[in-house]
Length: 323
Length: 295
Image 1 (cartoon, rainbow over the protein chains, first blue to last red):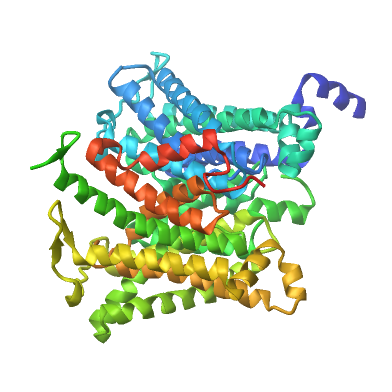
Image 2: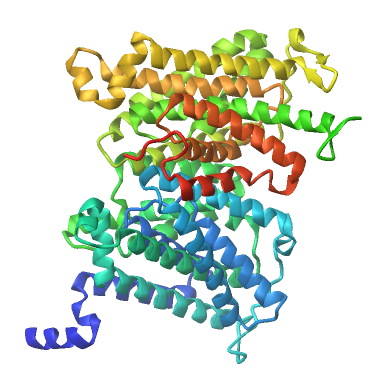
C-alpha cells in the first residue's frame, strides 16, 4: 500500500493529499452537488463566487502574509469588463469571463508593482487607496453607467452551445469554474513556488538572503490572486446579470477580509466556509439595513479578539490536522 | 475680472481656500494617525468614524444641551477621546503582542460598528450645524471674499498642529513619548508608566480627529458617512508623507489639500483621484514617503 501510494504520488497528486483534506474536499464537493436540491441555487452560486474570491484573497494574506485592503478593485473591474464584453461586444460567456480575468490581471500587475514596494500596514493602506482610485474611475467613466451599473447582462450560451439562462447549466458552469480554480490554488500552495511564498511570510529577510527574488514572488502571487478574484467577479456578474458599484467599493474589500478571517487565515478550506457564513448572514440581515454593517463590525471585533484562528483553523487545532 | 492661466482669480482663490480647509483636516487627522502609529504601531482605521463622532458630539451638545460651538471645541475631543481610551484599554491593549495587522482589522471592525450605529440612528442625510455667531460674514480681500469661519478653521488648525509639534519635539513630556516610541521597555524601566502613556496617546490622537470633526460640522453637514471617504484619503496622505515625522505629516496634509484644490480648478475630473495618483508616483520614487525613513 505504502509503495503504491508513493508511486502514485509521482504521477497523480491526489496521492499526496493528506486524508483529512481529502475528506474535507469530498465533503465540499458533495455539499455543492447536493445543496441545490434544498437551497436556492442563486444563493449557492453567490457563495461559490465569493468562496473563490476569498480563496484568492487568502492566497495572498494566508500564504504570503500580505493584507490587501483593496481586493474589491479586482472583483469589480472584472465584473464590469465581463458585463460590458457580454452585453456590448456580444461575446460568449467563457470569453467574457476571460476578458474580465485579463482586465484584473493587468490591474493586478500595475497595482502590485506599486503596492509591493511597502510591507505590512503600509501595504494595506496603499491597496486601499488604489482601490478607492479605481472606484472613482468606475464612477466617472461612461461605460459603467455610474449608479445604475451595467444591468440586464445577457448570460449567453457557453461555447455558443449551452444556454446559460437555464439555472442548472449556469450552476454547473459556476461549479466547474469554482472547483477548477480551487484546485489550482491548492496546487499553487503546495508547489515549490508556494513553499517560497510561505518562507517569505515567515521570514522575509531570510528568504532574501537565501537568494530568492522576493519582490518577483510577491508580485506573481499578487497578480495570481488578482486574476482569480477577477474570475470570481466576472462569474458573479454573469450570475446576477449585473455589474454595479458596490463590487468596487471598499466595503467589499472589507467583506473578503471578514470571510477569510471568519473561516480561518491561511487554511485551505477556511475561506469557503467563511464565505458561506458571511453571505448567509448578509442574506438574513438584508432587510435590516444598517444592521448588516453593525453585525459585520461586531464579528470582526470578536474574531480579532477571541477567535483569530477562524472556524476551520479552530477545527484543525482540535483535530491536530492541517485543513 | 483678472485671470491667471485663463482661470478667474476669484475661482482660483476660492478653490485654494477649500483646498486649504481640506488640508487642515488632512493635517489634523494624519497627525493623529502618525502619533498613534508611532507609539502603538497600530493604524487606527476608526479615525474617520471618530472624526464623525466629534461632529455628532458637537451637534448633540448644541441641540440637546444648548452648549455652544466654543465649548464643543473643547468638550467633544475630551468625550470622544475618552471613548477612545476605553477602546484602547479594553480591546487594543490585548493585541500589542500580535501582528500589527490585527490592530488594523480590529479598528476596521470598530469603524463599521460606529458608522453603522450612527447610520441606523440618523440615516444618511446630514444634520445642519449653524455657524457660530462670532464668525459669521467675511472679509473682502480685494481679489477674493474670505468667509470668517473658514479663515478661523485654517488658522486654528495651524495653531493646533504647531502646538502639538512643539509639545512632542521640544518639551519634556514629548521627549518621554519619543523615547517610548523608540524603546518602550527601557522607558518603562526608568519608572515611566508606559501603558498609561499609550492609553493617553491614543486618546489624544482620537481627540485630534474629534476636534477636526467639530470644526468640519458647520462647513459640511453632520453626517454618519462624513469620515468614510476622508479616512482613505488620509491614509494616502500618510503614505505620501511617511509616518516617521510629525512635521512631515502636517506639511503633507496642508500641501496635498492645496494640490487637490488646484486640481479642481484645472482638471476637475481628477480632483477625487489626484492624491492617490501622487501616492503611486511617490511610492515609485521614494517608497518610504517624502519625510519617512526606510527601516
